[in-house]
Image (cartoon, rainbow over the protein chains, first blue to last red):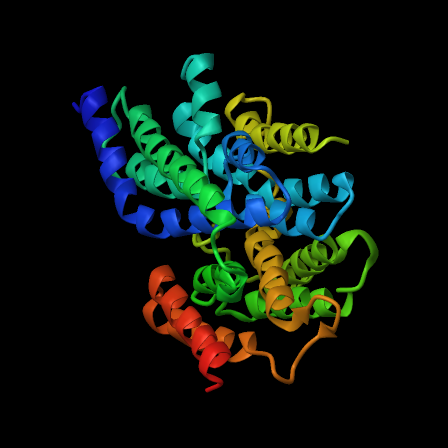
Length: 236
Length: 105
């Protein structure tokens, strides 16, 4: 049987390779946060309170182009709705834990921690201490995310605008999406969401993003239901 | 609404999406249509952000001519497909963007 420390250490080690991608992403978020008009403190607070990379980038992009608070809230919440599925799938292994553990682990349940810990829960023999694995993946991610945010936020004002560092956002999203968009339903979802974003880019209150997201979700959903496309485990 | 309140509200709703499934109050399995819809969330959210950052220039709208970001983005798609690496995609994309903007390649 594995001990609590074994599990924690394994979690940290499993999560380590992902940090090569996390650190620059957090750095970019920090820079963009300050550029969008937030103070260094507010930029870091968002990382602590929200703790979700893609949704924080969405937040800064909408904030930078003066968007009503309600639209930012709705868009960020839509982006994060997918956590419900992570929680339910990993919840089978966590639901019997004491409440204080679930309160803590829920906070640490991000895309990357989920991916590594669900692989351990499913792939290796169960242990009474296996929730320490999620504590390990989540804690490492938390520390690296906060450090990279702080570095980026302090760097923010020093980075010359001619470097166009904000371009890291579409680039890193391209890196995430390009290998995933393969089947017709995925192509249709991407194309309809992208086209809607262009058509509606002038829309008041920056509603283009949430409208494009809804169009993309609906068309992907409708087409895959119609075609009975099986869902794969690659959704992040 | 102050920025701080907005940050807290976003954090609160995000935390709920993470905590609720661990309470046992939700059904253990979401309906199939919901899982299917959620599967498309990353594609439906990230693609518009990519398209918007590449094609839209503040003040002048959709930009195709003299758009230095477009060739860099196309190169990045190819690099991402070939290597599946975030870092190499970032390096390739920025190398192309800077080469075009500074040297007019």
